Length: 150
Image (cartoon, rainbow, N blue to C red; front, side):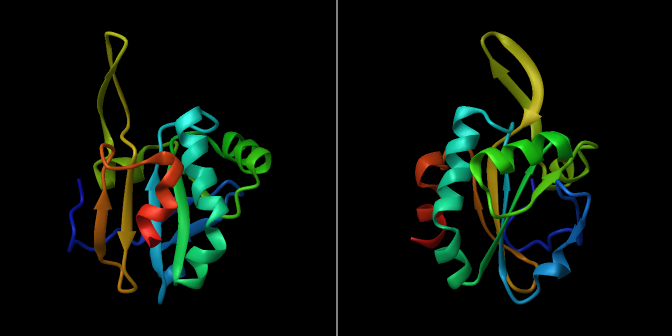
């Protein structure tokens, strides 16, 4: 997993509209790059809605927000529309970004083992360096925005 003090990758991926996002697109802002397991599941929806409900406050404090999961653009479009999410969602279908950040890991649930995205948020500073990592055990999905901006 990428650590505090490391430079984040320049190429982030394509959002739900096929637009390529790069780290340099957010120059001068802090970037909240949050990885989540799956669109429209209870925990992921709570987390996205926490960020949505506090989005204006986050922007006012200099933060941009981008979500990442391995679902495709069509799934992301439905998720964004249904919950009126104001920030882009990267469709990391080739797992390039989840693997680069080290969040594609072995998981266990209901007695089965599988590979999946571990819910993790990276706060990237204005210079593109990882300033903070909020891991799965720390994230409170319903209060996630407050964990970032207080």
